[in-house]
Length: 117
Ligand code: AMP
Ligand code: ZN
Image: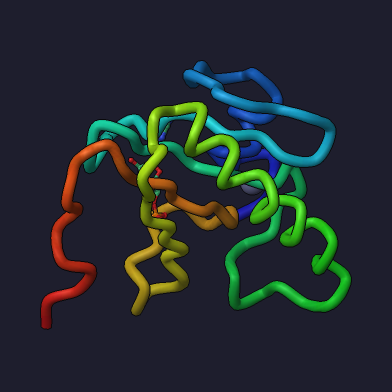
């Protein structure tokens, strides 16, 4: 999907609404529309990167910045005692939106088991 039609690129451009909890020139974060826990937000690069499988060395600083931000954003949303981060990737990973994003989930204690199979 092109960046023009991508839902997260539209949120980045404020073309569709979202409850943003953070934004700067490279990264933004907003509450998930279908929260899986009391705290559930997504950390997203403005750059349209399809998934973690497409990431390469040119993205290292950007991903470093995203992960550097997550702890402080999670604490600001009330996750003082921990949280979970998830990056669904591709069909096997159950990715729905093909623009790289990190789920940050918390606010209930304990969170459910990470995986069941
Ligand atoms: P994933 O399966 O990792 O691709 O997750 C995509 C996430 O984006 C899901 O948890 C959706 O609930 C969320 N989502 C989709 N559209 C929106 C939207 N317009 N605003 C906020 N979250 C959204
Ligand atoms: Zn996009």
